[in-house]
Structures are given as C-alpha cells and as structure tokens.
Length: 521
Image 1 (cartoon, rainbow, N blue to C red):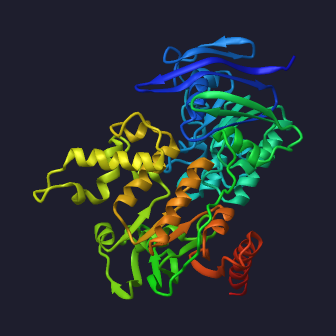
Image 2: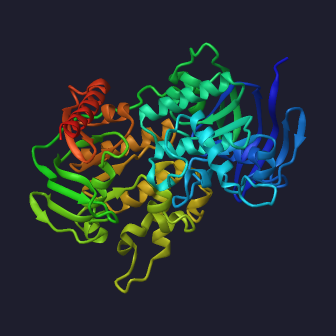
C-alpha cells in the first residue's frame, strides 16, 4: 500500500451559481512531486485553498487526512503548524521591507524577553536563502530584487516554517526559461531531501519534466491520475486529459498575408524610470509593424519590453520620454491612455489584477470600460441592457466560465479574468493591439482561443505586437521577432529563420558584449 502523506476525500465547494469542486479526491504520496493540471476554472487553486485553510472548514464538505489524522483547518496558520505551506501565484511580499523582515513576518524570531531578535532573524534568513541559491544580503529590500528572486524568497520563507508539504501555484508564470529551470531543479533537490511538493502549472513541459504523478481536474471533478515516474508522458497526453479531446494544432494555421503598408512605427524611442529619472529603461528603440502582421518581442526579465509598450500607449509609463510615433504614416503625439485608444491603440497589460481589471466590478462593466461612449447615450447615460448584451457576446466568443455577466471579476479564475481583460480591449476595436504576456497563467485551450483572436485581427488588416517570455509561442505565432536586452534592441529575425537557439544566442551575446564594454571602460 502506498505511503500517503495526504488524502483529500470527496471535497465539494460551491460558490453562488457555481460548483467549483464536485467530490474531488486527491492522494499525495510522501516524498513525491505531484502536478495538478486542468483548464482555467477546473478547481485547482480552489482545492489547494481548501487544503491550506484559506477556505476554512465549514465552507466546504469532505475530509482532509494528513499524516493519518483528519484535519479541520480554520485558517492558514493551522495548516502551517503542520508543515503545509502554500505559495500563491501572486506573491505576498511587502516591497519596502527587507528579505529577512518579509521572511519572518508573522513568524518573528524573539528572545526570552519577547522582543524580536534581529541577529537571529538575519542569520536564519541568510541560511534559508543559501538553500534556495540566493546570494543577496538578507537586508536588501524586496523592491530591489527581480521577480525571479522574489519567488525564491517566497520559497525560502516556506523553508523557515519547517515545510513538509510545499504547494506551488503557478510558480514559474512570471519567470523566464532560465529561472524556471532553476526553480524546477530546486524542487527535485528538495524531493531528494524528503520534501513533498504539489505544483499547479499550465506549462506542460514543466509537468512532464518534474512530476512523479499528475492529477487532472476538469469542471471541478477529478478525471484521472497518471504515473510519470519514468517521465515518459508527453504534453499531448496531458492535454487530452485536460480538455477531453486531442488538440491537434497548438498554434492555429494562418494564411500569412502581411501588407506592405506600415501601420505603426516608433523611431528613436527612449524612456527613463518614472521615479529614478536618471535610470534609462528604453534606449533609442526603433521598430515597425505592418498591416496584417504579428510582431513579437523577446527578451529576459528587465529587457524593457513592457516599459516600451506602456510608454508608447499614451505615455502610461516613464519620464523624459523622447522619440516619434507614427500611425498610418502620420506622426501622432499621444498625451494619455484615452488619446491612445482614440487613435486605435490598445495595450493588454501583463498585470491583469492590478492594472488591467477592476476586480470588485462585474464582467459587464469591465468589458465596456475602455470605450464606454459606445454604450452610452449622447447625454452620457449608460445603456445597461446594451452593456450586458455586449458582455454576454464576448463571454460566448471567449468561452468565459461564469454564471452571468454580473459576476464580479475577482471571483473568476486567472484564465477567465484574462479573457475578460482581452474582451475589454477587443470591444475598443483597436487597429494595433499590444499584448503583454497574453497567455501567462492560462491553459492550452484558452491559449488557442487567444491565438485565434490574434489571427482574426491581422486577417482584417490590423496589427498585433506580442510580448512573450515563451519562445515556442513567439515562434508559432509571429511573422517577425524583435529581441531586446537591457533596454536596447539587439536583433530582428524573420519567422522563417528564427529558432529558440538563435533567439537565446542573440540575447546572451548582447549581454556578453555589454559586460565586455563595461570591463574595458
């Protein structure tokens, strides 16, 4: 008989109008890495919130059996006392505190007088940081390290709580391939040390690489659990379990008819940090996109791609912005975001929860907020019936899982939130659509739907600029790919000649060149 550290039996959780979990069963063996996969809204995060006590006992039915004992957690502290620690997709760190302060916040190291022992706090923080490969001082502020290192701080924080069962919800969604590989290898190292891990991820290549077993959820129910001890399960097999069918073409076919006419162009575009105004984020960038073209932007974290896109979208980021923007061959001077929208630009942010959506508002209101004049009378009065009709049409097209368009966006899964965000900008009817990590944290089925929307746009003679950290996505969808490194344009490749190796080689060579210049100077 298998040695189970955890059994979740007949877990059922209902929200108004939605059964999020329907008699789900999950068994986790001691010392394994167990992947939990499924489409957006399948119930993965909800199940882990039940396990961690984020959803307390009494708000669900079923049993949690951990180390042979039935557990009824009232809050997250109850589960952490037993060594169950969850790291959510949205990192819960305070930017203005140090790494050590974040690591022991709510779990302070105190002396015999009850006061915080700062020497012990920083010593233990340093020890935990070494285990995850962080070489920074534990006194560095969180805001001064990158996203990848912040993810490692979260894991070090879990280690400080004597974690025995570590739950990672989309741990690599904000990481580049190099940082993702490092994190997965760390999980394999923890496994050798006897730790048990549950990982939720939509990156199926990571599942195939790291997981010993894989449980598939679909529509809130357990579909199957697959053994992957030999790591011989391929992505197609996982997809079939997730969506209930073969997904024959990950990237939909498109008849590539790129026009000769340039729809959007930036010339000698430079941007400085909005606060640290001497720090240059975008350095003299020039690029263009033609009618009917999908152009991709590749680069590592900190390359300046997001800063470039946001600053072009009505100067929504940065200071001391200089350069020229052209739409249909005419120079434009976009003063703000509304000006950009009226000129036919749209920017789909990578940060949907903070900058993209109003989580407390309904799907209907979020869908129409970028162009409310389209559903308002001449007097500015919103036509609610029209607003609801528009929202429902986008829900149907996007296949957004929701009981109604009046559902608050904050109650949706991450992938369904992304569909609402995309609906918002499609309703604005842009000619040029900037997509910043548009498929981050969403399942393969939803990705396919977004790719189809991109293809439909360029088929109509519009243009798409896609920023993505997933190289297969760029190669599968783009006509041309620009490569950026530390704010500079370092390469441009036609789709016909581009490969993952060429892109990464261009990035790494540019990094080495800059280091060499710095050494010589």
